[in-house]
Length: 312
Image (cartoon, rainbow, N blue to C red; front, side, top):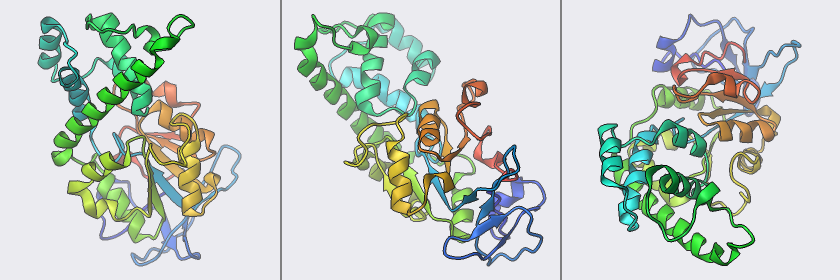
């Protein structure tokens, strides 16, 4: 989608305006061939694929963490601090090394949990901490703590540990997120789409309470979203990379998934959007290999400022 509005600061970082907007019904249409521009006009888009076919984009769905809000560094810190909060002690030398690195999780761990719900990423973190950091734990979390036939009796205990750690992480992250910054270019793109009357939603693995804390300093941006589908929404049976959350977001917007454009920073999120039948713009972490996104995204950019919408 190309969003060229005279009053939007988003346009100042993009190439010269080659896409204009014209009114086309309730949702509007972006037409890359239009040649007349007025800032009041509404929106929609013509997508050009390799076969020169067109698919109209009628709505945009954003991931939250790492796409709209720069929560990832804070999330890492909250994960590390949650060990002490749940009476799990990271060895002193390991903790000192983590602190020297700015309390960021090792990339091999971070990349494996991006986009997952807490019930899914906490066992992975505990497994890594036990096997790599040497954190002493009562239960064996090898392979993410997946129960074996001889370990089924511990399923309930595992669930308690996971829920306790997840809750501690959320509480700590919520405390840190009062100062969370928006990802570069995100407020400007959202404002441009809002002004062009494009329906928007958020599809996030975060639970609703956490979302409410994170939006504190960014209420203006959040007011542009018609719906927010959280990871604990009853309609979301399976988390990302399953398509449930994007199917639900498209359903609430009243738009077919094939007519939705998704912005995602995580592999699991991009897989979720693609599995739902949406078009996907990947905005991966700079440490992530972009080739990993080639089969599950329609466009890959370094940051939202790079999104020109030319191919849409």
